[in-house]
Every structure is written in C-alpha cells, then in structure tokens.
Image (cartoon, rainbow, N blue to C red; front, side, top):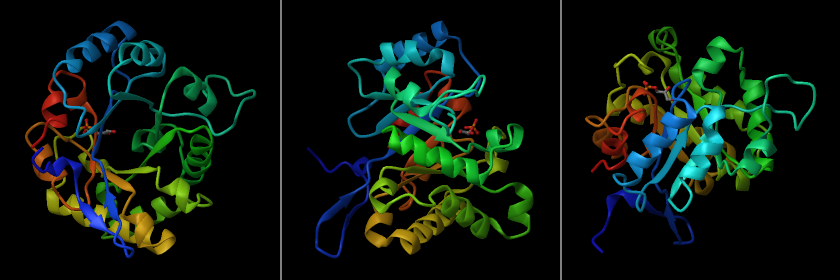
Length: 267
Ligand code: 13P
C-alpha cells in the first residue's frame, strides 16, 4: 500500500517508538434532523465515505442516537452525543448521564461547544467535570475551545485557549488525556462561512499542543488529537487537515448533507 498521508504525522518519541495520530473528522449535527432523516443521511454516507484512513464520527441530537447507533452497526462510523451532564444520576430534569450514553453504544461526546457556553451557561469548570465523567464511562470527550472575535482583536487568543484547555483537563491523568480530542473552534468562524486560514488554525493548534506538553510532557502531547472547527467544507478541508498540528475537524453545517463525504475523503 502506498504511504497514506491521512495516517498522519508519523513521529518518533525519545525511545524511537512510532507515534501516530489518526485523523478524526466529526460531524456535529447540532439541533438538526429527525431520527428518520438522520438514518437517511447515514445510509447515504455509508457508501461514499472512506473510514479506513480517517476516524469518522457523527454527533446527532440525543433523540436520534439510538437510531444512528443502529444504522451505523457494522460500519466504522462512530457515534457521539453533543452534550451530557457531569453527575452520574439524580434529579436533573432533561439531562443525560455519561453511562446512559455509553450503554446506548455512543462512543464520543462533544463537551463545551461554544454554543453551549454561550446559550446554556457552560463554563470551563463544568467542562472539566464532564470530561472526567465521560472518561470514567469510557467515552471519548471532544473538548471544544476557542476565542471570540473580540478576544482575537484584543490579542488574547492563545492565553484564552490555553486556559480553556488547562481547566478542561484539570485532574485528568496523562493516560486519560491521550484519549481526549481537543477541538479548536474559533467562535467567529462557526456558521459564518469565515474559516480561519490554515496558518491561523495551525498557530493555535500548535499552541494547544505546547500547553499539553507543558502539562503532560511532549510524548503525551504528541498523541493527543487536535481538531479544527469553523466553516470547514469540502473546498478547505484539504489544506486545513494537512497542517502539522491539525488532526481533523469538527464540522457543523457541511456535515448535514452527503457533501460531508468530500470532507472525510479529503486528499
Ligand atoms: P460550522 O461548520 O457550521 O461552522 O460549525 C462548526 C461547529 O460549530 C462544529 O461544532
């Protein structure tokens, strides 16, 4: 088989062992699609996406999770939730726990998305509590960080994103941190059609990896996957995902149609 660059950066650690970061591309469907529509899209994608070289995840609404887990059986498409509660159970009307998701066959959970921070009072502290609980339940947390336009204009992007990353991973061991995916999503790029340039995205993803190296050491930082999210589409995926510190993407609008295949099958 010819060398496939999607198997990504092959690095060597200090002991000369190979470190590989498999690209991970996730579709965050947000509050879109009924269970029937969700299954229809899965059936379309099944035939058109390459799941050999990329870890593919879809994150539908909670009411679609069961149907989508069923529809993806026998495929390499993973299923993720868009949120969860940090308590194991109890009087939290409307909420869902990590173990409930895990029992359903859900493998990933998006945590701290900027829309949840903005509209549902999610904070760095609750993102940390949720990250810990998700890991305990065997879920892969996809932890979102990112700056607003105002933050960027005030030149505090790196500090802010570093802080979000550090707090999200507080009290998470190095072994557990290796399972976490960080999604760098600049708020100004979400749903706006204004994608960060590949250089802007790379600069912040690289800074996040440096923070991870400060906290956990370089070897751990080198295996943690960092996605970019914000107006990713079939035309810009190639350039973004070929940057050295960008290990795939978290895709909103462009993951809602069969065009998601163009992103997953980037070159
Ligand atoms: P868009 O791809 O629609 O900009 O959304 C990105 C996002 O928020 C993914 O979580």
